[in-house]
Length: 182
Image (cartoon, rainbow, N blue to C red; front, side, top):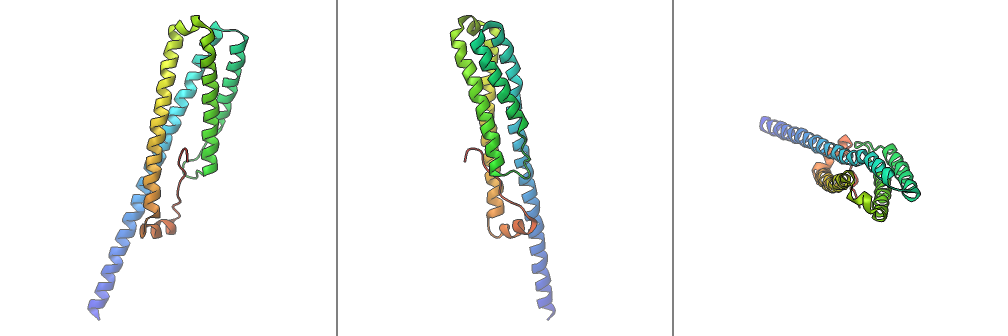
């Protein structure tokens, strides 16, 4: 009888320790995912911060056509900046809305860059060349950080959906998170 009781207590202790370890690993993975989301927001903000440079350079060298495009870029930037996503409670719809607003801004900026082709003097200006290099760098950073975020989401989602870990995840309310571009 005593052996059975000790065996049950040992099994219960092992299960409890395993459950605590799993819970803590979910929290660590969730924090890594949240940090990766912060990096995504940082690189998008960096791109947003470049837009006033583009506006000032293009305004100095262009005519009405580019002024109209610049207004579109400003409006798209305000719309994109207005969309905030809470990484802890993110839904696929929120992520899609965020992604769409960033895509609209990217399209607007690319339209301005294409319109610059009509202004050979502007293409040669060092400030514009610097802006283009920084903008391309931002776009590359965005791709890298989005990929890293998706990797963190994949690790997190796999960890909470795998059996028997899913039992602990369900019990404590851990839910899957959406990916970029899916």
